[in-house]
Length: 116
Image 1 (cartoon, one colour):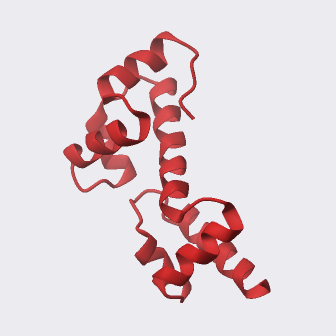
Image 2 (cartoon, helix red, strand yellow):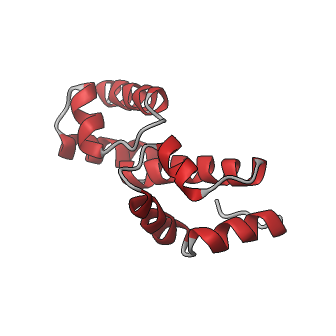
């Protein structure tokens, strides 16, 4: 159990250090020195959600922060977050937020409604 907490701490540090790129569970697992399936199991037990959902939440926070702080274009945020393409970013926004990027940006600018 103590070793599991060490892995989680290493994973969180790694995620923060490389927050400017889209990480995968596999990349994180190998970076901290364990098998990906073990990493998912340990992470889910410790955090209550999968690493993928955790990463999505971190990215969601950054997208909302960027959209509420200034008027930025989707491709700019896509580049900053390390998505492989603009299309991948727009699909991710639709999957995670449930609305298109355009609707999300309008809603965030015009209301105080939170999406996190």
